[in-house]
Image (tube, rainbow, N blue to C red):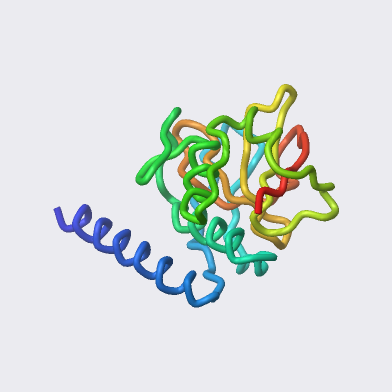
Length: 171
């Protein structure tokens, strides 16, 4: 019982801290992500502090996505306590006041195309052909995403993901 209460208290505090600090323009360091439990090639890492996003909306989206690290992956979930990949990105941008399409396929056609070499925090990064996965670039070669069942929302190295398909800037 104590564990559940502690987790709820910690989560509530984390959300309050994100709202208060994000509004002040301070960049939050993500919590350490869980290690990959096997089965995939992408591994979670303990992330360095994300780079500063190019504008306030992108910063809110990054901070919101990072605040979900550790939340469970659930297919079709759009938050606030569980997510699939595109549910996480649409939830994060909704917090920033920007409505984006719900699915990774539709998100991959929204906004402006960005070269991998020009990625900025807040850019959406896509994988596979046809596109079937999305994450959010947070800077320093890392992204946050909800990858698959059994793995929580995590920060990983962008290059640890297979089949990079492109990126879009929405803010």
